[in-house]
Image 1 (cartoon, rainbow, N blue to C red):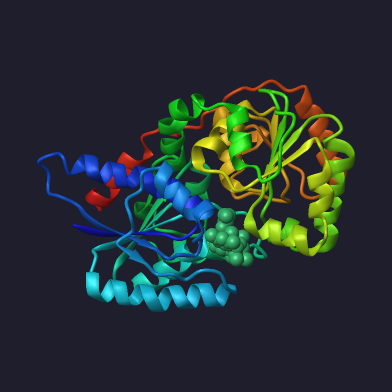
Image 2 (image 1 turned 90 degrees about the vertical axis):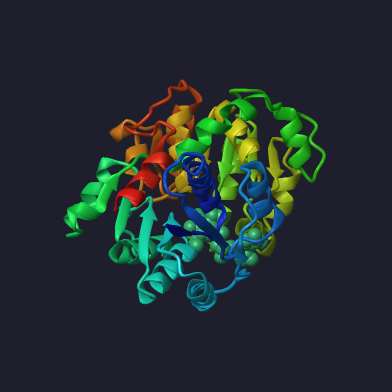
Length: 379
Ligand code: UD1
């Protein structure tokens, strides 16, 4: 059996790494071997967003890099399809395995189906119900086309059944990202907070935050960072209210950095002694910072999940989430606040007094990749 594994953007790398490890383990047995090719679409391309993840997660060099880079959605999806079709024609895999919800996920699943190659989607069935999110469109189309839909939880399986997906195609395998998290905990645990901060900061940092005494921030969604009014309001909150109570550590996504510069917000942030801006972090650095933070303020889906497992109170700056299992009402640690700053403030004050308490959803046990591979083999 030959698999084409697809990655394109940062959150994909964390999901493909355990699958490659599971394939390598399988190939040590006497069972029929599984061949794979790794295809990187190149949507994320710089050393912080891509290379550092390949290194820290020991992902082998991709067999193909499609070099798509930045662009509009149509450019990224269209260029990926054109380049990926050539790979499929020459490599003739039995399966294309896509993960997550980025433009690579969508583009490669459409191309595969048109070439009549089976598609397996890992992290199927997530739904935010928000059609203004590019990721929601990517999820819907990918799941509609997939032959095998591997879900992280029961809520996602239920979404698929409600949409009329053939139940035989849906398998709950747990959350593959938590395989990576569990594997990395020991290495991350050995890192020192101040060393991470110094290594990733462009400015001189005089005061290093201590464990359980800082808020970790990540923001990159267009709904938070693309409009001057929204981003200004958020930055004002950080400066006027949050940073006066607790140090803020903020690894800045390239999309956000560009907009902070464009909207002339960057200098004010840099001048604030209690706000530490960092470059995008490698996986271990981020895990360490998350596991020691008083709280996380984010709009990332992956971080909501990691916070739930690590027990970090998570203030999610989104109006909806495709990951309801991470919400407090479903047993997780995250609370949705949109970009309503009165809600952010309330949750921020609550989180200052909240204790870290880990919650582990069913099958988020570090063995999802083995189950994914078993389902592909069994199909
Ligand atoms: C993408 C995904 C999103 C995911 C996020 C994680 C889609 C539709 N969106 O959004 O689901 O949560 O990645 O990061 O696929 N850039 C760099 N260096 C890079 C990559 C990008 O500087 O290595 C810049 C680009 O020039 C671009 C901006 O960052 O202007 C945004 O990149 P893009 O890939 O378009 O989308 P993300 O916002 O990263």
